[in-house]
Image 1 (tube, rainbow, N blue to C red):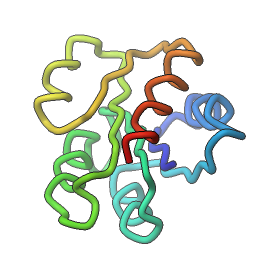
Image 2 (cartoon, helix red, strand yellow):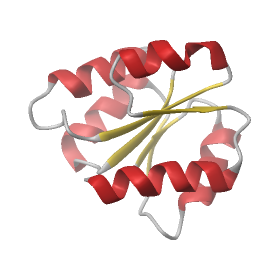
Image 3 (tube, one colour):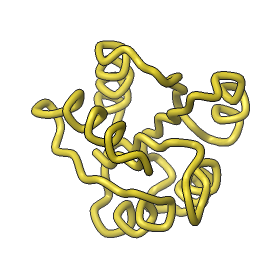
Image 4 (spheres, rainbow, N blue to C red):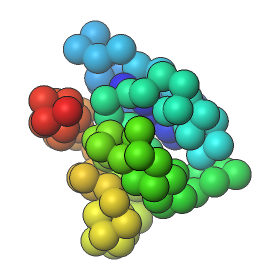
Length: 116
């Protein structure tokens, strides 16, 4: 499981929400997320849409464009709830609004992890 969130507190909250059911690796920006995705091949990526260096939408597009990562489950995370349709149209499997309910995030990630 790869979590990409530039806010340290939110990244920690996502990690704590998903552990211990999932091994979580963390990225602080879009470039780091892609590097870790290529190196570690996570089953699911939880990515904030508003990131430094490379946006979450760019990360999603890169994952979908890479033959080895195209089937990776992707959860887009954003406080901008109006971006849900754009995120899914851009390749995210699911969209979760911030602030999120930890049980909802666990359920969405669990569903995607089972599909992989």
